Image 1 (cartoon, rainbow, N blue to C red):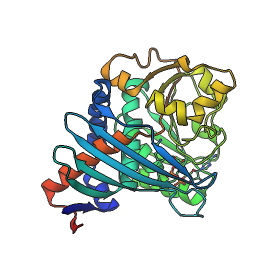
Image 2 (cartoon, protein in one colour):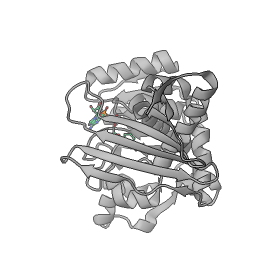
Image 3 (cartoon, rainbow, N blue to C red):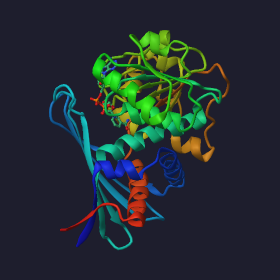
Length: 325
Ligand SMILES: NC(=O)c1ccc[n+]([C@@H]2O[C@H](COP(=O)([O-])OP(=O)(O)OC[C@H]3O[C@@H](n4cnc5c(N)ncnc54)[C@H](O)[C@@H]3O)[C@@H](O)[C@H]2O)c1
């Protein structure tokens, strides 16, 4: 059996952010129609900080299957990307394994894309200023996802790792042609920002209600275990909360589970899922002063949707190599 192999660089070159957002929209609509099987992922906990995740999914109709294997090792030292992954694609119609691709850039792209998609329903239409908290592996993709949907005039980047902060500012300027600048504190980044993204490895809150201005859309993608969180309970309990998946959030999202455990909110405080927003069953932002929050832990069928888009483009353009297995 011959399978197509795509490196992370090839995946990055083949996927564009706007196209990825549209693929995700179709996938969340498929989920709303009950055509997606994407069980909550299996997490092998290697240490407190280190996890290996297995993420399978099927979209019925297209009969596309994917399996992602991700290792998240945030403590490997300076300069080492903490999230590394690869993805297998299987054609559910005939069982063929079609492709193995680097999943690190795919993860970044689909995670940026879901953040971008959330802006369609939850950001103010006139949102111009983005505060990007965390300038690691996900930072560039997050800015790129939000910028694909909003006319950003200013990006403020905060990360205590100065080298990463500087590198992200430069990438935003050079590759995305955005007005980006480094800032010294979370407060400086978030005050007056229209969209605030948290994409850090912090396990304790770095952003709370005191930092956030009325009308802001907050996107929290960093924390993915029940005891870790980037957001304080004041912010989460006051915001209109939306999630990528209710089932996954109730297993994994410390940002929501901790305020629930503290009695600051209940499960029913969550207003809806992304599938509800894209299908129109759930109403998104209701006015210009509401603080909205989109909490995403990351779903296997997002890799499926963007992975198959990348595969189709590679087949058309002849990109990638072939391996006999
Ligand atoms: N929701 C999803 O779908 C999804 C997808 C991919 C990654 N993630 C998660 O997102 C997080 C970030 O991933 P990454 O690949 O960018 O990690 P990374 O290790 O490459 O970068 C993390 C960055 O966060 C910064 N940071 C840590 N504490 C901070 C704080 N208090 N304030 C500001 N910055 C802080 C670090 O200095 C570092 O630059 C990880 O926890 C990862 O598991 C989630």
